[in-house]
Length: 399
Image (cartoon, rainbow, N blue to C red; front, side, top):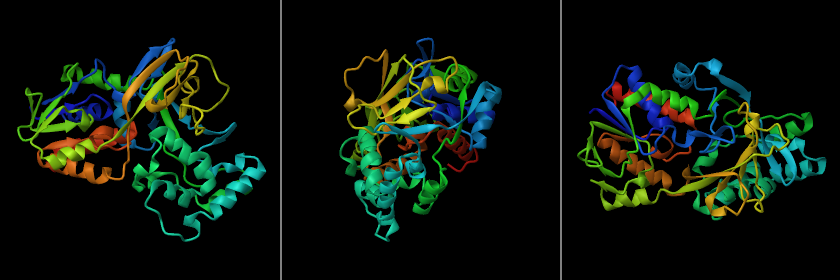
């Protein structure tokens, strides 16, 4: 066989679809679960879809992504939303990002935040720090750091934040002090906005519906209930049975029990890849808010985010919370699903480790793809775009 694809999440499904759309049928997808979608799966809970892998939405910005998804699920089957995400600052709710919306706080709080931002290191020509905690203070000021960014990231990623690198923080919305000050004077947000400022969500069956549609189009090209446990790099064989010219890996590298054909150094690189596990807990009672989701930095509260299902999923009620499994407490949730692999951790050593892994594997025509294949916190729309690009690259003979 020419292409063996490991995993039927968004990355694997999009890559396989790109092959199919180019009239290539010499491929096979292996998926360990009994349904497609990976972290973007949905299931019916309390009479409506629940996205068991957490909140996943399709950004409107990537045209080639929308073209692929709309080919199996036309635009009329989606709802178009302007993002409404909020932060609960200890009882006061303001829009995200915080730097652009502190004008929504009481006046004395605005003044305190502005004073802090004005003397942040980046605004007084201090050199950029290399440690995570120092970088947050340098960029945003100690007030935002202490009240929001540091406690929130601790809840998501763990208490020792200086295990994290700073290389990924450049992706955060960049709102200057001047823009923050202007927003306070004019009472509206200024500066760059986060991803998914506008997004699509399916009218029916939750975020998993579009991935089910893609999988249905692929039919018998997907084999379910098969877990990729062993990888022979030089022979291009998975589980001693499935051999292919190209292997596209979208599953976590750390899930392989055995990888033949790598040295101790590369095996050590794989072991350095870290991740966070997250519990999704559903509650049927409604909360009064127009927000699609709410960030919760208060460390006395176990969860870090609320997804208000009724505000984006038609015909539903209630909400779910997302909690780092190390913070799970006894609760009265009506449904719980644990995602072992939720977020790749951006540790200090990760860029070197994953670049070594991907470079070595690609020399043997094995390509990492997506959130876990590339060990990057990509959203599903980004993953689809990267899958289409990789398929086109290989089809053009540039692998």
